Length: 532
Ligand code: AMP
Ligand code: DBH
Image (cartoon, rainbow, N blue to C red):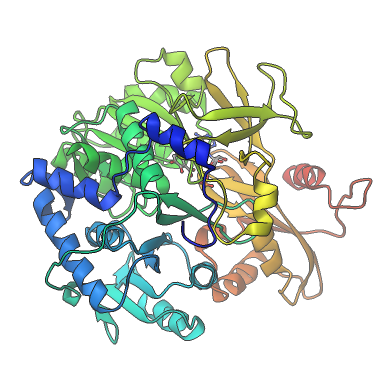
């Protein structure tokens, strides 16, 4: 296995193979097989572009040959930062066929996150789009290639400037060395429990299992027309079941450039979309828009919602407003996926985050001493299974804390389990703010803010928010002249922080409430600030 990754123990490997979770088929081959079965069926649609399975397959092969000519090969990491465009998929399959490993950054990430990802992964190439939603990625690539010596190439979808145009990077397809399905296929980003994002190795075997079984749980078939409204670099629309789930059954993926109701409703109507996936704040936006829109949304069968807790009142409004069923999804890029079954009674769909995908997702719900809580009580969810990681990439020290000695991943989520096995997410123990599904690693932002000349000390806390569930408030002890939110956020932006991580509020205080041990009492602090 790739250096810096933790493999499953041999007895688990045998078991997951025997039980058919791991099928020994590399992800590049999944597309090949579908292209053989249904060459002319529409694989993906973006704007005016429509690629059949045969076309996607061919493009991936040509691009793989072009990348090989640049010297990109097995085991090398490539930092990929692309929005929802067709090239995301020709590139992903090209890399998978080469055995090269994409590291999927989100389009919203900026220099602060990207430098860290490039350095940690020692990426040899960085792939961007020229511009998306008014942001030009080329200056970012210039800065990054100067700062990170491992980066040898920058490839650009669109106008390449001094870099290599992705469309010119094509060669004559040739046989490539076989890819081992037990190897790492992709590196996904963790929402973070501490500090900067960690990298999650997902093998061909485990990620194919993830997508295939999720597609089954969601009723995907060759008739599925899935709208990717969330950024496809994220595990939810990428493989849970998302794009990979669609490609595995010969359905059609329709790419949406951004998730506003205007854009998405046009595509749902035009493309007769059957399934899509959203985070909770977008659900509320879509529900409002649907009440005055005259779009025909009648093709929509299922809306999957995950990433943060969905309020039951909002859940209940989905069918009346959008005319489709709701499926709740509780997932993590680290692995475990839970779905409410399609035939579950309404109250369980509204009130729970579903059942684990497989019988071999071993779930433990434990107290602070790692002891199982009483049935039905709230505790931290630990998980082990055929598609849940055993260790973060190059993170030996953090892994000691993030995993138990017997290989369970500590999710940091507080959950309880109903007698039916359904899980309900009640909160979290990890230091992350969940801003409507977008995860903000508290420690990383605090560390940055401590470098601000006017800030003596800082604690980033979550405040309740009607739309987002939570928003972030930077509580600071400050020097004169006292800083304000606009100037602090401008300062953070200059440091290249992704916009969704900027504090929503800044509160200057004279002192922090402390615990008896003298640490900042975050709970008391959040309550104090919420009451101001
Ligand atoms: P990430 O680490 O970015 O993959 O985010 C995964 C985390 O998102 C989980 O550990 C949960 O904290 C949160 N999450 C995902 N889906 C849900 C959901 N349906 N309800 C509540 N929290 C969720
Ligand atoms: O929040 C997540 O990371 C998430 C949510 C729903 C996820 O990774 C998934 C489904 O696969």
